[in-house]
Amino acid sequence: MKNFSRFGIIILATVFVLTSCGGDDEKFIEKKENSDTIPVKIKPDISAEVINDIIMSIPSPLEMATMLKDNGQGYDANLLNPSTNIIKYNTNYKIAFNIGVYSADLGYINIYEKTFSAMSYLQNIKKLGDDIHIGQFFDFETLKRLATNTKNYDSLIFISTDNFNKMDAHLRTQNRNELSVLMISGAWLEGVNIACQVAKLKPNKDLTERLGFEKINLDNILVILNAYKNDEYFGKIVTEFEKLKQIYSQITISYTYVEPETKEVNGQLVIVNKSKSTVDITDEQLKQIIDEIARVRNTMIN
Image (cartoon, rainbow, N blue to C red):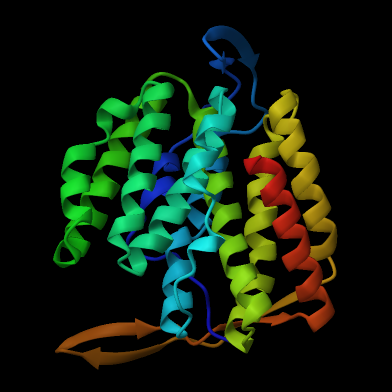
């Protein structure tokens, strides 16, 4: 089985979280309950460096969507979180988590160049961004124009990435890094759920192994979620993800080191990684993962 590495292009939700909260300093966040604002005090128990390293190790949902398309899987709008669900997200934490979910959905939509569907998800991300005061960094009009023309696909990805980097930078300057952790968690869960539903209908070896490999990413996400588990909402997510971890604990991942090779490509010397990761996963374990991912995802988006 081939190695799974982070794509060079980090799009949508994952770019929110390149840097997270710091040290033992106490952080504050505002929780939005309808129109009211309630201050909530959160003290993470993990260093910013550790959180940052973990975040950077988690692949973008765009990578999963690309894999599905490359394997010949067709587009299925039924796999997405319905855009009408936006009315359910009435707290800052729910908003942040589902910005991640909708960002993963938008990445899936963009890979398949379904421009009509992209519009409602762009609108949702803009609306949710406004609700937590970061929507000013989301260039909705430009993205809307690009989304209506499939020839602008590369520009759409680039500008989306730039916009979300600006939103992330603003969150960090405001010491609201907990929202970044939620966004990456939502994006990961939605991306894996889409792949699980495809595997349920049309399984193949590469996709099955990839879903087994998500054991590592789940473990990493739980590390950063546990840093805030004393908060009720984070505690709920940790509880749900821990149930999923129990199933993943049955899966074995082994790593075989092979000395890298060097070769000349276009007149330049490059290093070729020959090491491999192998996932040992049964059909029954895959079924359990598919069912549990769907359950957790439906719990979190509803």
